[in-house]
Length: 329
Image (cartoon, rainbow, N blue to C red; front, side, top):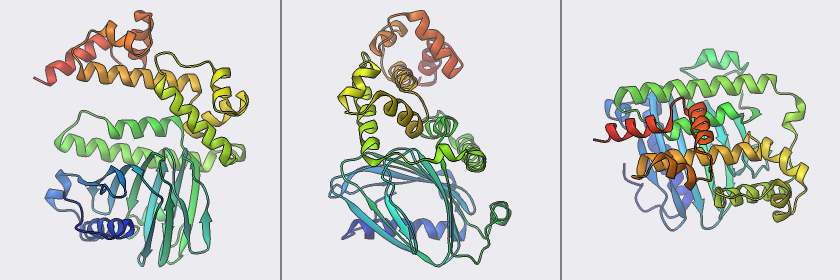
Protein backbone atom coordinates (compact mmCIF):
# COMPACT_ATOMS: atom_id res chain seq x y z
CA UNK A 1 0.00 0.00 0.00
CA UNK A 2 1.32 3.47 -0.84
CA UNK A 3 2.29 5.98 1.81
CA UNK A 4 -0.17 8.77 2.62
CA UNK A 5 0.30 11.72 0.27
CA UNK A 6 2.25 14.86 1.18
CA UNK A 7 1.97 14.97 5.00
CA UNK A 8 3.52 18.18 6.34
CA UNK A 9 4.44 16.74 9.77
CA UNK A 10 5.05 13.29 11.15
CA UNK A 11 1.92 13.73 13.25
CA UNK A 12 -0.10 14.25 10.05
CA UNK A 13 1.51 11.17 8.52
CA UNK A 14 0.72 9.07 11.59
CA UNK A 15 -2.90 10.21 11.73
CA UNK A 16 -3.46 9.56 8.03
CA UNK A 17 -2.34 5.95 8.55
CA UNK A 18 -4.43 5.61 11.72
CA UNK A 19 -7.53 6.99 9.97
CA UNK A 20 -7.07 4.61 7.05
CA UNK A 21 -6.74 1.63 9.37
CA UNK A 22 -9.64 2.82 11.52
CA UNK A 23 -12.03 2.67 8.57
CA UNK A 24 -11.24 -1.02 8.14
CA UNK A 25 -11.27 -1.60 11.90
CA UNK A 26 -14.77 -0.15 12.26
CA UNK A 27 -16.34 -1.37 9.02
CA UNK A 28 -14.81 -4.83 9.03
CA UNK A 29 -11.98 -6.07 6.81
CA UNK A 30 -12.52 -6.68 3.11
CA UNK A 31 -11.32 -9.80 1.36
CA UNK A 32 -8.31 -7.83 0.09
CA UNK A 33 -7.30 -6.66 3.56
CA UNK A 34 -7.69 -10.19 4.94
CA UNK A 35 -5.26 -11.56 2.39
CA UNK A 36 -2.75 -8.73 2.44
CA UNK A 37 -1.10 -6.70 5.12
CA UNK A 38 -0.90 -2.94 4.82
CA UNK A 39 2.71 -1.72 4.63
CA UNK A 40 3.85 1.88 5.12
CA UNK A 41 7.43 3.13 4.78
CA UNK A 42 8.41 6.12 6.88
CA UNK A 43 9.18 9.12 4.62
CA UNK A 44 12.91 9.84 4.42
CA UNK A 45 12.63 13.34 5.87
CA UNK A 46 11.80 11.88 9.30
CA UNK A 47 13.71 8.63 9.41
CA UNK A 48 13.92 5.05 8.24
CA UNK A 49 11.62 2.13 8.94
CA UNK A 50 8.45 0.33 8.09
CA UNK A 51 5.04 -0.08 9.69
CA UNK A 52 2.94 -3.18 8.93
CA UNK A 53 -0.68 -3.80 9.87
CA UNK A 54 -2.28 -7.26 9.67
CA UNK A 55 -6.10 -7.32 9.76
CA UNK A 56 -6.80 -10.64 11.45
CA UNK A 57 -10.58 -10.57 11.91
CA UNK A 58 -13.30 -8.01 12.44
CA UNK A 59 -12.22 -5.84 15.36
CA UNK A 60 -8.76 -7.38 15.79
CA UNK A 61 -5.49 -6.35 14.16
CA UNK A 62 -1.74 -6.59 14.71
CA UNK A 63 0.80 -3.90 13.85
CA UNK A 64 4.58 -4.12 13.85
CA UNK A 65 6.79 -1.02 13.57
CA UNK A 66 10.56 -0.88 13.21
CA UNK A 67 11.71 2.74 13.15
CA UNK A 68 14.76 4.98 13.50
CA UNK A 69 14.13 8.73 13.50
CA UNK A 70 16.62 11.41 12.45
CA UNK A 71 15.15 13.89 14.93
CA UNK A 72 12.68 13.58 17.82
CA UNK A 73 9.08 13.39 16.59
CA UNK A 74 5.74 13.87 18.32
CA UNK A 75 2.28 12.49 17.70
CA UNK A 76 -1.12 13.36 19.14
CA UNK A 77 -4.41 11.60 18.56
CA UNK A 78 -7.89 11.74 20.08
CA UNK A 79 -9.92 8.60 20.76
CA UNK A 80 -13.61 9.46 20.82
CA UNK A 81 -14.76 5.83 20.92
CA UNK A 82 -13.63 2.86 23.05
CA UNK A 83 -10.18 1.57 22.09
CA UNK A 84 -8.12 -1.29 23.56
CA UNK A 85 -4.46 -1.91 22.75
CA UNK A 86 -1.65 -4.18 23.92
CA UNK A 87 1.69 -2.50 23.13
CA UNK A 88 5.01 -4.34 23.38
CA UNK A 89 8.03 -2.05 23.48
CA UNK A 90 10.76 -4.49 22.48
CA UNK A 91 13.42 -1.77 22.28
CA UNK A 92 13.27 1.96 23.00
CA UNK A 93 9.78 3.34 23.48
CA UNK A 94 8.11 6.73 23.52
CA UNK A 95 7.40 8.97 26.48
CA UNK A 96 3.63 9.38 26.38
CA UNK A 97 0.67 10.81 28.23
CA UNK A 98 -3.09 10.25 28.24
CA UNK A 99 -4.90 13.18 29.84
CA UNK A 100 -3.95 12.93 33.52
CA UNK A 101 -1.79 9.80 33.24
CA UNK A 102 1.84 10.17 32.13
CA UNK A 103 4.61 7.66 31.48
CA UNK A 104 8.18 8.89 31.23
CA UNK A 105 9.69 5.57 30.18
CA UNK A 106 12.14 5.70 27.31
CA UNK A 107 13.40 2.14 27.34
CA UNK A 108 12.09 -1.13 26.06
CA UNK A 109 11.40 -4.44 27.71
CA UNK A 110 7.90 -3.73 28.96
CA UNK A 111 4.34 -4.21 27.70
CA UNK A 112 1.27 -2.07 28.31
CA UNK A 113 -2.41 -2.87 27.96
CA UNK A 114 -4.23 0.45 27.52
CA UNK A 115 -7.94 1.19 27.34
CA UNK A 116 -9.01 4.66 26.15
CA UNK A 117 -12.37 6.30 25.55
CA UNK A 118 -12.92 9.99 24.79
CA UNK A 119 -9.32 10.92 25.64
CA UNK A 120 -6.28 12.32 23.83
CA UNK A 121 -2.87 10.63 23.72
CA UNK A 122 0.41 12.43 23.14
CA UNK A 123 3.74 10.66 22.50
CA UNK A 124 7.32 11.81 21.99
CA UNK A 125 9.74 9.47 20.21
CA UNK A 126 13.51 9.93 20.47
CA UNK A 127 16.02 10.31 17.66
CA UNK A 128 18.80 7.86 16.74
CA UNK A 129 17.36 5.02 18.81
CA UNK A 130 16.10 1.94 16.99
CA UNK A 131 12.50 1.24 18.00
CA UNK A 132 10.86 -2.16 17.65
CA UNK A 133 7.20 -2.02 18.60
CA UNK A 134 4.28 -4.48 18.33
CA UNK A 135 0.65 -3.57 18.94
CA UNK A 136 -2.45 -5.74 19.24
CA UNK A 137 -5.62 -3.66 18.79
CA UNK A 138 -9.09 -4.78 19.78
CA UNK A 139 -12.46 -3.16 19.17
CA UNK A 140 -13.96 -3.28 22.68
CA UNK A 141 -17.49 -3.26 21.27
CA UNK A 142 -16.74 -6.64 19.68
CA UNK A 143 -14.60 -8.00 22.53
CA UNK A 144 -16.94 -7.44 25.45
CA UNK A 145 -15.94 -10.63 27.25
CA UNK A 146 -12.30 -9.55 27.19
CA UNK A 147 -13.25 -6.22 28.75
CA UNK A 148 -15.18 -8.06 31.49
CA UNK A 149 -12.17 -10.25 32.14
CA UNK A 150 -10.04 -7.13 32.54
CA UNK A 151 -12.66 -5.52 34.80
CA UNK A 152 -12.94 -2.52 32.46
CA UNK A 153 -16.25 -0.74 31.85
CA UNK A 154 -17.02 0.69 28.43
CA UNK A 155 -17.95 4.05 29.90
CA UNK A 156 -14.68 4.63 31.77
CA UNK A 157 -12.14 6.89 30.09
CA UNK A 158 -8.82 5.19 30.78
CA UNK A 159 -7.23 2.04 32.23
CA UNK A 160 -3.67 0.69 32.07
CA UNK A 161 -1.97 -2.61 32.97
CA UNK A 162 1.78 -3.14 32.72
CA UNK A 163 4.15 -6.12 32.74
CA UNK A 164 7.70 -6.91 31.76
CA UNK A 165 8.17 -8.70 28.46
CA UNK A 166 9.07 -12.31 29.21
CA UNK A 167 11.33 -14.57 27.11
CA UNK A 168 8.20 -16.39 25.86
CA UNK A 169 6.73 -13.09 24.66
CA UNK A 170 9.96 -12.23 22.86
CA UNK A 171 10.00 -15.64 21.23
CA UNK A 172 6.51 -15.03 19.83
CA UNK A 173 7.52 -11.56 18.62
CA UNK A 174 10.40 -13.18 16.75
CA UNK A 175 8.09 -15.78 15.23
CA UNK A 176 5.70 -13.07 14.08
CA UNK A 177 8.47 -11.21 12.27
CA UNK A 178 10.05 -14.31 10.68
CA UNK A 179 7.98 -17.31 9.59
CA UNK A 180 7.59 -19.37 6.40
CA UNK A 181 3.79 -19.33 6.07
CA UNK A 182 1.70 -17.93 3.24
CA UNK A 183 -1.99 -17.46 2.43
CA UNK A 184 -4.61 -18.63 4.89
CA UNK A 185 -2.00 -20.65 6.82
CA UNK A 186 -0.14 -17.39 7.43
CA UNK A 187 -3.35 -15.68 8.54
CA UNK A 188 -4.15 -18.44 11.02
CA UNK A 189 -0.57 -18.54 12.31
CA UNK A 190 -0.40 -14.78 12.96
CA UNK A 191 -3.81 -14.73 14.64
CA UNK A 192 -2.98 -17.69 16.90
CA UNK A 193 0.35 -16.17 17.93
CA UNK A 194 -1.22 -12.75 18.55
CA UNK A 195 -3.81 -14.31 20.87
CA UNK A 196 -1.10 -16.34 22.61
CA UNK A 197 0.83 -13.12 23.16
CA UNK A 198 -2.22 -11.55 24.79
CA UNK A 199 -2.68 -14.60 27.05
CA UNK A 200 0.97 -14.51 28.14
CA UNK A 201 0.74 -10.80 28.93
CA UNK A 202 -2.37 -11.26 31.07
CA UNK A 203 -0.74 -14.11 32.95
CA UNK A 204 2.42 -12.08 33.57
CA UNK A 205 0.53 -8.92 34.58
CA UNK A 206 -1.46 -10.83 37.19
CA UNK A 207 1.31 -12.96 38.68
CA UNK A 208 4.46 -10.79 38.48
CA UNK A 209 5.92 -9.90 41.86
CA UNK A 210 6.46 -6.23 42.80
CA UNK A 211 10.23 -6.75 42.55
CA UNK A 212 9.99 -7.43 38.83
CA UNK A 213 8.28 -4.11 38.13
CA UNK A 214 11.08 -2.04 39.69
CA UNK A 215 12.25 0.64 37.28
CA UNK A 216 15.86 0.84 36.16
CA UNK A 217 17.52 4.25 36.24
CA UNK A 218 17.54 5.88 32.82
CA UNK A 219 21.35 6.25 32.77
CA UNK A 220 21.72 2.53 33.48
CA UNK A 221 19.18 1.70 30.77
CA UNK A 222 21.25 3.60 28.23
CA UNK A 223 24.40 1.76 29.34
CA UNK A 224 22.65 -1.61 29.03
CA UNK A 225 21.36 -0.80 25.54
CA UNK A 226 24.88 0.24 24.58
CA UNK A 227 26.13 -3.11 25.89
CA UNK A 228 23.62 -4.92 23.72
CA UNK A 229 24.74 -2.94 20.67
CA UNK A 230 28.37 -3.92 21.38
CA UNK A 231 27.37 -7.58 21.60
CA UNK A 232 25.57 -7.36 18.26
CA UNK A 233 28.76 -5.99 16.66
CA UNK A 234 31.04 -8.60 18.28
CA UNK A 235 28.98 -11.80 18.15
CA UNK A 236 31.87 -13.91 16.84
CA UNK A 237 34.17 -12.87 19.69
CA UNK A 238 32.24 -10.89 22.34
CA UNK A 239 33.97 -9.31 25.34
CA UNK A 240 33.79 -10.94 28.76
CA UNK A 241 31.04 -9.81 31.11
CA UNK A 242 33.54 -7.87 33.22
CA UNK A 243 35.06 -6.19 30.17
CA UNK A 244 31.62 -5.39 28.73
CA UNK A 245 30.58 -3.70 31.97
CA UNK A 246 33.77 -1.63 31.89
CA UNK A 247 33.16 -0.62 28.26
CA UNK A 248 29.71 0.84 29.06
CA UNK A 249 30.66 2.26 32.47
CA UNK A 250 28.33 0.24 34.67
CA UNK A 251 29.06 -2.32 37.36
CA UNK A 252 28.82 -5.99 36.48
CA UNK A 253 25.85 -6.78 38.73
CA UNK A 254 23.76 -3.92 37.36
CA UNK A 255 24.57 -5.08 33.85
CA UNK A 256 23.52 -8.67 34.59
CA UNK A 257 20.31 -7.76 36.41
CA UNK A 258 19.33 -4.93 34.08
CA UNK A 259 20.00 -6.95 30.93
CA UNK A 260 17.72 -9.71 32.15
CA UNK A 261 14.96 -7.24 33.03
CA UNK A 262 15.12 -5.28 29.77
CA UNK A 263 15.65 -8.10 27.31
CA UNK A 264 14.26 -11.13 29.10
CA UNK A 265 17.49 -13.14 28.93
CA UNK A 266 21.03 -13.19 30.29
CA UNK A 267 23.97 -11.62 28.47
CA UNK A 268 25.21 -15.10 27.57
CA UNK A 269 21.74 -16.19 26.49
CA UNK A 270 21.41 -13.11 24.26
CA UNK A 271 24.72 -13.84 22.50
CA UNK A 272 23.70 -17.46 21.92
CA UNK A 273 20.26 -16.43 20.66
CA UNK A 274 21.69 -13.89 18.21
CA UNK A 275 24.41 -16.25 16.98
CA UNK A 276 21.88 -18.97 16.20
CA UNK A 277 19.53 -16.53 14.50
CA UNK A 278 22.41 -15.23 12.35
CA UNK A 279 23.42 -18.82 11.49
CA UNK A 280 19.82 -19.55 10.51
CA UNK A 281 19.82 -16.53 8.19
CA UNK A 282 23.10 -17.64 6.62
CA UNK A 283 21.71 -21.10 5.94
CA UNK A 284 18.65 -19.49 4.34
CA UNK A 285 20.40 -16.92 2.20
CA UNK A 286 23.94 -18.09 1.47
CA UNK A 287 25.36 -21.06 -0.41
CA UNK A 288 27.64 -22.12 2.40
CA UNK A 289 28.10 -25.30 4.38
CA UNK A 290 26.72 -25.80 7.86
CA UNK A 291 30.23 -25.96 9.30
CA UNK A 292 31.06 -22.62 7.63
CA UNK A 293 27.92 -21.04 9.09
CA UNK A 294 28.89 -22.39 12.51
CA UNK A 295 32.36 -20.83 12.31
CA UNK A 296 31.04 -17.52 10.96
CA UNK A 297 28.90 -16.95 14.05
CA UNK A 298 31.64 -17.91 16.51
CA UNK A 299 31.18 -21.65 17.18
CA UNK A 300 34.39 -23.62 16.74
CA UNK A 301 32.84 -26.86 17.96
CA UNK A 302 30.47 -27.94 15.19
CA UNK A 303 28.79 -30.64 17.32
CA UNK A 304 28.01 -28.09 20.04
CA UNK A 305 26.57 -25.70 17.45
CA UNK A 306 24.42 -28.45 15.89
CA UNK A 307 23.08 -29.49 19.31
CA UNK A 308 22.16 -25.89 20.22
CA UNK A 309 20.52 -25.34 16.82
CA UNK A 310 18.46 -28.52 17.19
CA UNK A 311 17.42 -27.62 20.74
CA UNK A 312 16.37 -24.10 19.70
CA UNK A 313 14.61 -24.76 16.39
CA UNK A 314 13.64 -28.42 16.65
CA UNK A 315 15.71 -29.74 13.74
CA UNK A 316 19.34 -30.22 12.70
CA UNK A 317 20.99 -27.33 10.79
CA UNK A 318 21.75 -29.60 7.82
CA UNK A 319 18.11 -30.69 7.60
CA UNK A 320 16.95 -27.08 7.89
CA UNK A 321 19.26 -25.97 5.07
CA UNK A 322 18.16 -28.86 2.84
CA UNK A 323 14.46 -28.17 3.40
CA UNK A 324 14.93 -24.45 2.86
CA UNK A 325 16.78 -25.04 -0.41
CA UNK A 326 14.05 -27.38 -1.64
CA UNK A 327 11.28 -24.91 -0.78
CA UNK A 328 13.03 -22.18 -2.76
CA UNK A 329 13.11 -24.22 -5.98
